[in-house]
Image 1 (cartoon, rainbow, N blue to C red):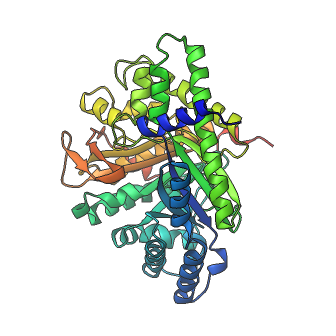
Image 2 (image 1 turned 180 degrees about the vertical axis):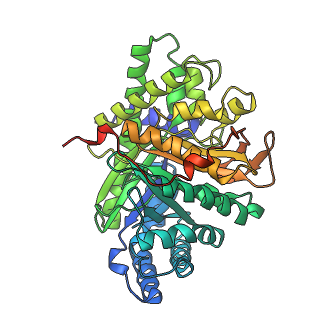
Length: 452
C-alpha cells in the first residue's frame, strides 16, 4: 500500500532530482502497408499511424497531469522500412521517410524511428534502397530517425555494411552541415539491435512484436546520484544494493504509467526500459553518478568498473520491480547529452578510447560522439567495427552514433540545442584502417553463437 512517505519521496525525486518518464513510445507494425505502388503504400502508412497514434500525445499529457509525473517525450517506432522497400529504388524510398515525418507531425510526436535496415548477414534490395537513401531522407525530414544493424552474436558482422555506413554517416553530416550536422545525430549503427527499444534514435518496431504496442522509457540519473550522495560511507556491496533499491522505485513508476497509458489507448503494454539516460540539465548526469561513487572525474582509472557496478545494479533493480523490463535497460553514456561527460572530455580526462572501453559494460555504446569534420569515412567505419566487436563477442547491444563536425576540428564544439545538447569535438586516431575495412565480406560469428 502506498503511504505518505512514499508519496513525498516521489515528489522530491520529481521536483529536485529530475526524475521523469523519458518517453512513451508506440510501436506500430507497417507490414500490412506494403504495396508495389509506393504512393498507395505511403497512404496506408500515413493512415495507420495517424489513426493508432492520434491520442498518444494527449494520453501522455493526461497521465502527467493526473500523477504529477513529467512525461518528456511521446514517440513512435515503426517496422524497419527496408521490409517495405524491396520493390522501390533509393530515390523512391525517400517518400517513405517523408510520409513518416508528415504522420509524426500530424499526431504531435517529436520523433519517429524505424527508417531502418537489418543487414547483419547480408543485404536485400530493400535494405540497400533504405541505406543509400538515408542521407537524403534525414536531410529532408525533421522527425525521422534511422538505424542500421550491421552485426550480431549469432550472425557475425557484415563488413561490407560497416564500410558503407562510414560513408553514409559522412554524407548525412555534409548534407546537414547548416544544421550543425544534426542529421548524423538521428542515425545509429547497431550490433545486436533489440526489437522493443523505446529510445531514439535507434528505436524500431521488431517483426516479433504485436501490431501495436506501448513501451515506456524511464530515466533518473539525478535520483541515483542523490541517493548515493546521502549515503556517503557505504562499502561497495551496500552501495550496489542502494542503487538497486533506487532503480526498483523508478521502475515501479514506469510500470504504473505504461500500464495506464496502454489501457487508455487500447493497445498492449510492452516493456519498461529502465535506462539512466542523461540530459544536459544540471544534476542529470551519469558521469556525476560515477564521480559520486568515488571517482575524481569520469574517465580516470576505475571508471569502467564503477560503470559496470552501476549498470548491473540498475538491471537487477528493474527486474525486481517489473516482469516486463526490456529494451536496453541500464546506463547510457552519450557525450553531448551529459554535463559530466562534456566536462570530462574538455578536461582531457575522457578519451574516445576510454569511452570505447566503457561501452563494454554499459547499455549501448559510443553515443553522441563528435569527431573532427575531416575524419575519413574508413576511420568512422573502423570505429563502428570496434564497437560492433564488443557487442558481438559479449552478446550485448552496442551502437555507434558518431557525428563528423564538418568544417570544425578538435577544441571546438558542435551545438545541437534542446535534448541533444552540445559536444566537444574529440580527437581521433588518424592512422588508416582502409585496407582492413575494404576487405569486405562477413566477419564470422564467434564461438558464443553456438548455444543450441
